[in-house]
Structure formats: C-alpha cells, structure tokens
Image 1 (tube, rainbow, N blue to C red):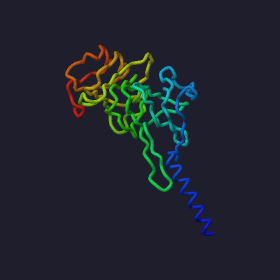
Image 2: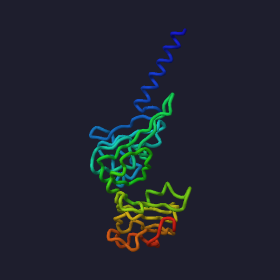
Image 3: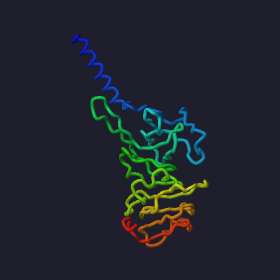
Image 4: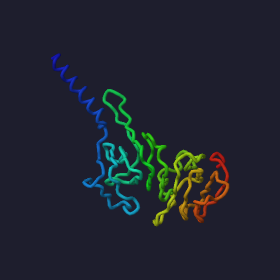
Length: 240
C-alpha cells in the first residue's frame, strides 16, 4: 500500500511539472499561423476589415474557447494584429498558466525587434516585455475599437502620452461605415505622440469632446480629422 501511495504521488508530481513547464494548464495551444495553418475567419465576421493573422503569430485559447490570447509574435519589423483567429476574438497579449501545486507561470509576449504594430481591434497588454521598442503603432477606426470598453468606470479615454519619447501613433480610417450609437465615452484625450490622424477618423461620434496637449493642429492631423467633435487645445488629461 505504501508503495502504491508513493507511486501515485510521484505520478501526480510528474504530471504537474509537465503541465506547468508546457504552460498547458487550463489553456490549449490553438496554433501558429503559417502556410499550413488554418487561419480562416468565420463568415459572420468582417473579414475585409479584420485580416487573417500574419505568419508566425501563435495563439492560445481558454479551455471554453471564448477568446484567444496572443502567445508569441514573429521577429519581424512590422506585424499586423488580427481581430479574430478561427472565429474567436483576440483579447490579450500574454497569458497566465496556473499550476496544480503552485501559483503557475506568467507567459510574456516579447516585442523585441518589432518596429511597427498595426491594430484593427483592441488587445490588452497582460504580460508583455520590450513593448517600448515599438516605434510606430497604427490604429484603424480607433473609436470603433472602444465600443465594448466604454462607460463602466469612467466617461473618458485617452490615447498616447504627454511626451514624445514613446511610440508614434497613427490613426487611420477604413472605408467602412461605423455605428457609434453605443459609444459611451464623453471625452477623448490625445497625447502629443499621436502624430497622424486621417480625415474622418472621428466621423459619426456625437456628444464627444476631444482634448489634446497640442496648442494647435499638427501637420500630421488632416483637415476634418475630428468630425463634428469640439476640440479643446492645449490642456492636460486632468482638465477634461
């Protein structure tokens, strides 16, 4: 009996270590995109707006399959982050692997070597490193990305920082018509590292005020960038 108990304990410990080392506890590997990977997006999603994942991005999904986390990025200078992978929304960078007899392990996504990131979705930074090595971040249809995230804690959101030593941000507009009826923020603040805004990026927003530290419109901000939103120039975020 004692030998049986010892053997059982040994098996449990070995399995625990194996799961912990592989990061598979409560998470399963979805796949790494590439020529042989299934990267089709469900037809119910806007595949024209949200492209398939680039080669080399790896994903993990929670066991119930509600969403995927980005587990790794390719060592490329420019990477486009997809909004969906196999019909599941992309939600976080990095993930936590819980252990059986330990607190588990934090799995970080390394941005080293990436100079430009392109987003058409909102992805939260959970476990990241070397994110400050990115030089340019591009958002397409920026207000649309925030539709699921507004209103619960605050009536304002912000993009960028008060200094120019962070990644340069470009705000682009697609040719899609966007419905902002459910946009709950009342104030948007743009930091000084928001260098480019295309015309019409904020078209469709109503009852929203935009604030910025800039005293006047920068050269990279196109005429008509703000739509019908009033702008407060030369203020701090706390002034909104």
